[in-house]
Image 1 (cartoon, helix red, strand yellow):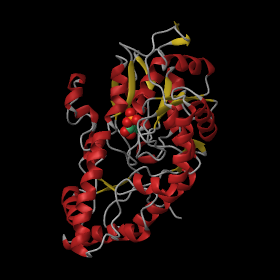
Image 2 (cartoon, rainbow, N blue to C red; image 1 turned 90 degrees about the vertical axis):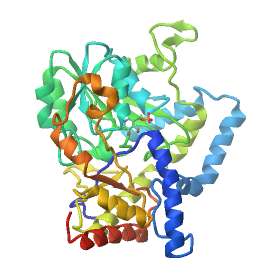
Image 3 (tube, protein in one colour; image 1 turned 60 degrees about the horizontal axis):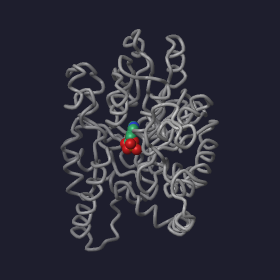
Length: 411
Ligand SMILES: Cc1ncc(COP(=O)(O)O)c(C=O)c1O
């Protein structure tokens, strides 16, 4: 497969995704009825969790039943086994399971002792939880602009580093990793720690090394639509640092070193046995699913042609296409046209975090992050999951080309 102009993307917050899936189902049903009178439509669904469940139903049911029959539901064998297996997969020594991706980031920051008065450098074109986790610790998020791949523009990091900066937190958005070699070099120069937000990048690689294995700590979400998702909420922190690992084990479990003896102040953020059992099954399929996502991306790229801007893949990157995000200055017109053809699209993310109402106190203004702000008005996420068919991708690509040819070729 040739990745000349390959895709990149991100995911919505939980509620948006749930709503989108419901809306998409209704829109698809209507369009299918209009176009063929049949339910065997080529139109791909947006996230494909149900298709995936049906494909592995027997394995999942057996794994869940085993936990139910064990009588042990929190912090048991399944969590320990998953942590070991996911550590092996990511290429790190330790993994600590926790309750969500948001809390994975918060726990990672807490483990480093980040708190009020500290600054964390990150990006604003991300799922809001990247930033809410920083706020949870009392630290201040500081934003840098992005490059043409929607990833942290490493050339801008040093301009925002102050004596209060403690951490740089790149986001591997849409399934593609940020330039970790440059980020680590800058962090080392300024004495900073690096936390990877890898919530959208299970199995992604940069220079042959997996997401979660570059920074001091890596944070994953197992929200159901993620490349590796469970059937509820879940998350994990990766690290090679034994001290941080031991601290994380306590932090996620009320700060206790042994039962009822609390060494530090912690929270309850545990991955449960059922979700861990589900993740163990799904982890064995992850590489195959990621490969299918890459195949879907190549079908989209071929089908869309030069009708609008397809995502690009960085040199040295192994992109796992959590999302497939195209870019056009006529985004809203295209979105309406695709909706009328029964194709669900989403925007990841329509409002960058620095311009969100909730973060007004940071004092950011329109114009602070010009590339981030321009892309927010032009991005459109197409249906992406391993079960999208070639016919489905072709159908979406044809509709996109059709729209722009009717509009006189405007991109
Ligand atoms: C980039 C990014 N960071 C953090 C999170 C938070 O993960 P969770 O929803 O599991 O809390 C998400 C999830 O949407 C995400 O996409």
